[in-house]
Length: 378
Image (cartoon, rainbow, N blue to C red; front, side, top):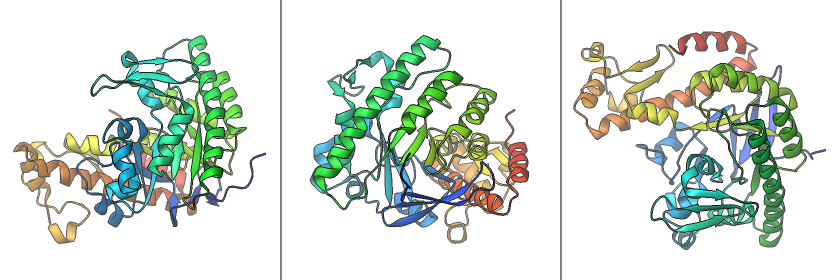
């Protein structure tokens, strides 16, 4: 049985949808929460100080990309990833497992680890579960993700099972390396490690993977292999099946989830944190996320004469209007993306706050239905 987890405290659990408190880096972070993606140590078109002022306490960095550029030597020279990017809050680092799937032409999976060719300069590198732990420890990540094999939808049961078993073997090795590293360094840095449930879209494999990963004393449990191209119905089906299998005392993390409808479904099934490039990607394309109108395209002509004030991080100070942002996008000005990114990340923060409030007042199902209607996929 997993020991009580000081990292996460459940403060409300009337149903599968729950609120909690994640304690990281000398701070308390309320869940459910969205985690902006800072793959290379930055969140696109946003200064990290603005995220801090907005109330974000956790961002994501990517081990694969940071290892290749700027490289560990530079980050270690200044002290930590926090120091390098000037971010005093918490950081979760992904292991690069998703790149195992997405860069399939540049890598080879073997029992020892992943042999891959850099997409930048063609140099070859080997990522083992142990090396990934070493890299993330050097970065001084608050939460480390283990190396895993993420598979796309549509592959066979046999192939999915093979990848899952490889993930399980790597998870054991990663935990052993993590515990050894933590015991040897005796650092006061708060080290935590999450395991990843895989198994594709096969119920028996998901069940097997959840049992295996949760038998290892990880501080948190992640659900991998979702939002990789499957339909919303299939996504929801997988979450509903997994929800009762998850250890309720540990934090639950759905990897790569960022659209409002996918987030609502995840929260409905007991997920506490999620991450995605979705809000900033939408922003770069002129799509704004709003709590009253759903998703709007600011490039549409109807906004040319709309002089309402935009809900940016500092709306009271700046006073930007819908009309002005419409003009910036039409003129292809860089400021357009910066303002739109502020709007969408402000939305994500407020959206999660409203979700927490609805759970605590026992009105989550009503909120779920209302917001799903607002963000219904056309």
